[in-house]
Image (cartoon, rainbow, N blue to C red; front, side, top):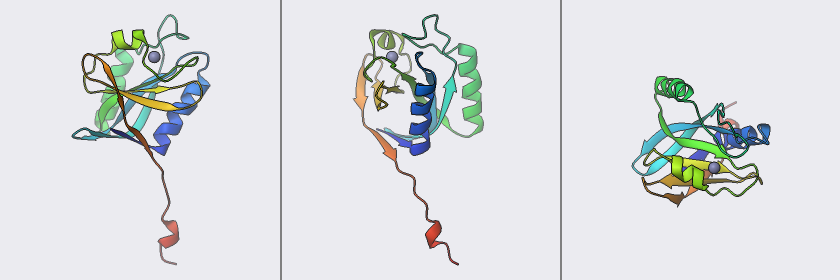
Length: 144
Ligand SMILES: [Zn+2]
């Protein structure tokens, strides 16, 4: 299961719209407790694929930079996100052939602006429960 803050969900969907007709991509970071992940950060990365309308690729150098940043924040990489500008949020054959991080979440934003998460178990993608935490303010309870 992966829990997303509303900010993380909005950032991914906004980034996906902004980069049309190309696929957006980035890294998702946060904390992990057993099989539950809490995504607190989404970091957009450049799509360096030669055909960015059909697939995504993050450069190893940018991934390293992002990984260092995440470590400095005291967080860990939980997985990746990318968008499918022309389709449903289901992993493609290319996504499957390139998935390498066992246990990582692969979030996919659809053309309609919905988000789905897939867990890579080392052999295949398994649909993963993805819950957005609605942020709320308690300011009304803060004294005078
Ligand atoms: Zn894909």
